[in-house]
Length: 276
Image (cartoon, rainbow, N blue to C red; front, side, top):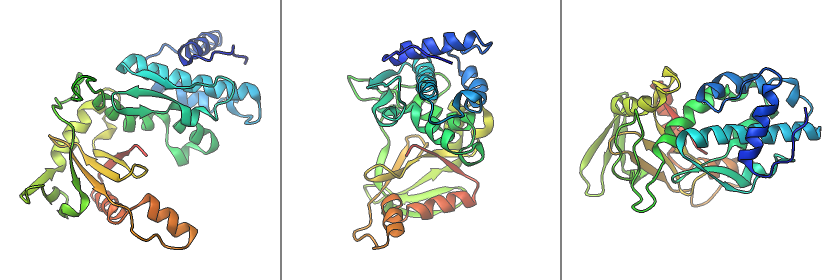
């Protein structure tokens, strides 16, 4: 399948949808099309030959379609530079901005094409992780306030940010912590699940165990719970990384206390959307 050179991701997405319509695939820029059509396309012959230039154009066009669909549905804006001939540079240089959140369409698609669905999960599962974030991160440029979307609880301020060492304990009900005034506070997982699931309901009810989001690649790394208001715990990196290459990687990706909190949440069958 051939694709015209479209340096504009919006034009590339439209040209891709028009070409596939001739084959009986109706990419109509709807949320349903992302759930129904993307996984079959990723498994199709269009993407089998990784060394084929036509396959590169197909991957770039598919990323443009995913990003453009989400942009239209959630009022985003394309940023960076888009390469229609080679998807490689798009991994770092082409994204859709939703308030303060950057969504890179190429990240999941590239990883999925290099691995199996068993390793990466389906594109629908990927959407379950990112849709709540896209909905919550639409900021009002003039004030910096977070704008609420339909089906989402109002958010009148940014998350309360606290150091992770203020956490006093974690059990199946929630997180006990001390706030900046040294007062005892509590994050209820029941409230977090309700807030996260209200946004996920637009796509699937499978996000019932979602209680927040995390980003180990941020500096500092953080875990945010979707309470009202949201509570974000930041984790400082290790002062002295270990010497072995594997240890240096783990020290960089998981600062002290980070992995331990993830494992504790996993024991209670609770999940965090991964933004890193």
